[in-house]
Length: 298
Length: 298
View 1 (cartoon, rainbow over the protein chains, first blue to last red):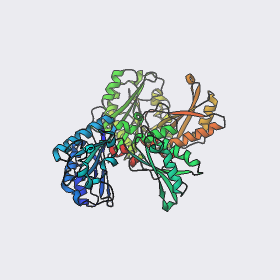
View 2 (view 1 turned 180 degrees about the horizontal axis):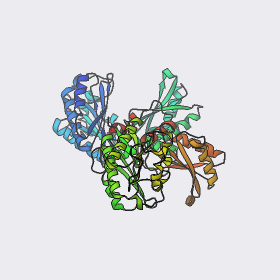
View 3 (view 1 turned 135 degrees about the vertical axis):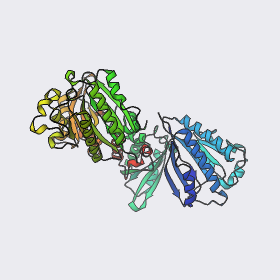
View 4 (view 1 turned 120 degrees about the horizontal axis):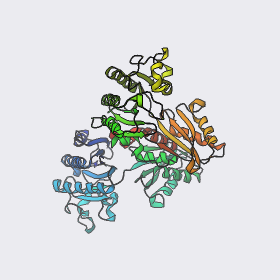
């Protein structure tokens, strides 16, 4: 059975399409690797590429892309609204098919080692690959950004996991790690009151007492005159979409507010949709192996 | 984008595993063809194979399998509980990905032509490939079975679509056609009263006023002391699973009966599960192109 891992590297270039294409081209025309998506953001001056592949070929492609990004991006002149600390800012590996989190962690560490040895780019391991609790959260790792990194790397707590206490002069540092697939899932409410949306978001999200693998905040959809609970589902295998959806509905009730729809932004693993269908129809003994496309992919 | 068609040929051999394996082996080790499943039934003395592939390679594999079945199966000595009229009883082609029904129909007709020319096995086109309304329904075509076919073929209405008015001496005749994927979907009721299950089945099925692409009957699950509405969903793209599920629930209410679960038997296309999840969460603007696995398969 073929193993499939996803990788979503973030590059600090969102404007120069020629440079972006040169980086993207390192993922093209490779056996057992497929570039699924490129999201360029000019304001952020950042591109997010979604790549899938078998573990080894994917690792090689990612390493090639890092080399290309180091050649093309000079962080000393980089400006953009999104926090960033390197030419390649972050490289998460995500288990998709016939691989477990441990495989993705191993892959992230192998990649990190090569990135340091080959390019002298220091690496922090983050999320499931982190070597200490404070390195799990990317925001902690990235705090200080490119400009603050030379000083940060000299503090006792922030020695890189691979590399010395000195940034790459033009490419800074990179965070490499492993995580579950993220699903961007928003539930729409028939109120224009953002305070209600925020209050509901607070009840469903992990940090304030809600679901373990759910981040949430209220968002206004001004042109429609409604609001939404905008969620990041960080592990749909443990906190399924339907559970967050039903909880939003239940919490909305106390404000006399109704759920009027939802949306998934970007890609979603098949399992998240199958789990949801199985829940609502009370499917007994159902396995994703029964999904025709899953069988074809094997 | 790769085109994928499914084919589910039924062979009149369900006991002799060596013969079954010889037929199955015609589908193995072929480029762009994959044997997903073999269901052998000894009482029926019949095997159902599920194969997927790109149109041309799939056609060639199916033609090879027909040849092998003709070599190995002699209908003059065939006994089994399931109605049958040939060594290969029926060959449906099913559009799965990047193909439409018209493509599956064309493929079924090309296959039928070769089967006649190469093996002198007469063919009736059925379902979406049928050349007259009375040939759409397989039961009509097969009526009389192997033993009655010599006489049936001589009647004005039953000239084969390919071939002469004379059966293949040992292999009989075959029905070749195109149809949508079938989903075997059963909804469980908390009553042991089969009359209630039958009454509900009657309300949801097409023939008695229900949903256009739904066949249904009541079934007892004796060991659990419950019943179920056992359905064949014949086109989930037009009659989705959730609609049948909700209708069963609504009709059950008048008997004070509750739906206590459901099951899908065998394979189900991803689209059927995605549609169902999208319905229950009121997903706006969702496309199966957002499903990661669908993107990987492209």
